[in-house]
Length: 320
Image (spheres, rainbow, N blue to C red):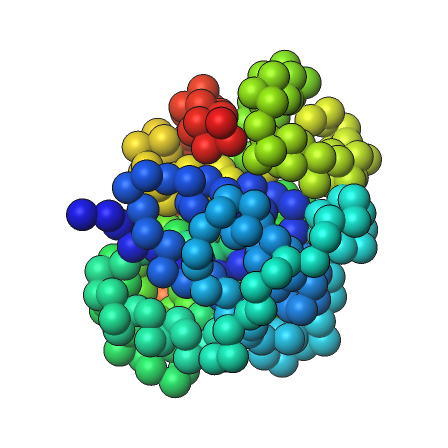
């Protein structure tokens, strides 16, 4: 039997590649793709997702969701992905229209119809938080919630303290992590350094001479330039596909541990910081009151390392 995935995303260039990996996985059924404002506005993200689905010749419904964070003004990442989120290559409009049902309703219905599914989140967690507020019981019907987000115990990519997806809507992220759902945090740092798609990797992908391979490299052209400015590293950094590879095959993550986790929501200096109790001191007497909600929610799985060769082979296989 095929595994069922529900994907919530703010589709820009790396999200599109992650969608390809899921849609091309032979043992996976993507039941729904739900859209949230993040990298780009929700309407543009929806257009990008629908275009990617059609490029894969797949038949998966796409639902429009939250247009802005729960409490804060919406801020995008077009400086990184380009104005359209796909590197400004003027891709044609998709043919199929998005579904009429709101993404939050689609999330609830999809989970209830597919108990035990794996949920993969590639953007801000606004839709998920709204769904949990409406139907808290769905936490028990999700076997894994694989979250691309956070910068556990390292620097962020949008502020010194925070990763973009969590920073955009920290209140939503905190709601999800404190909900008791079985969350796995795949931080942005896993996609750096040896995990970056370097020129040799790019040449291998282009040598496939496939529509999907060419698209994956082309749509990330703007992101490649932005990443080099940001970090000094040359290549394509793909946080969402890294997270998707681990969602599809958890053994690609080679070092895991479980810890209490919280998100900073009150201090602008550290807004969106994913605070991980890596030394397991949260339930010490001096910390117990501050960490009470996190302790009640239970420990979350944190991935610290991945097998870069296998992640890149998984990507290559999806783009054939």
